[in-house]
Image 1 (spheres, rainbow, N blue to C red):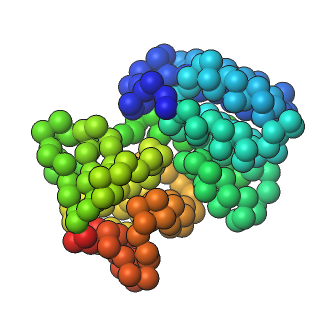
Image 2 (image 1 turned 90 degrees about the vertical axis):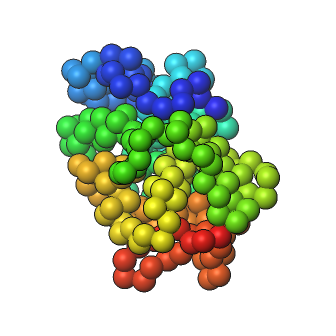
Length: 243
């Protein structure tokens, strides 16, 4: 996994990898990201994207879905085998299947083309402000592990285990679990979860939360019909069960 446990607070210390086969668009995005001080790397096909992710160890990857050599889905899948950096998927098609597949292989968010470069920069800035402490908490280091039946959540170490077996979560999945488990039995709306995990300035389809919760449940072995850990609150959102 990536050497970074969390994002760098300083723009100048943060690296963004832009993977886009349209070179003019890639250079434009690079220019917008360099203005606030990010270090920006470029790649224009799938194999180069995976190699650059290993070499640069970026904090964020902006990854186009339609790439030559290796599409964005497979590139994302491969990057996830060695890095937990944030991945924002770009798709030229407003196709829900593309978005869901991208999130299913480890992307944290998606943006549909055409997009505003300023919006893209805002999304990058938002993910680099993560992770944040949950409301009402002090430092994570002061917390004992959170236990829900056989589910153990070590917030300080960002580790999760079920029945003593480690569970490998993406940053977004872990952050969702950390928020839900911080106040058990409290029902969170999708918007509240977005504000806590993504950012209060995040704009997009709030059902992105449902996709990440579905992946989280699958990894925890939690049946949504008879949940042990994460309950669906109809008409509201989600809450942490007793386990």
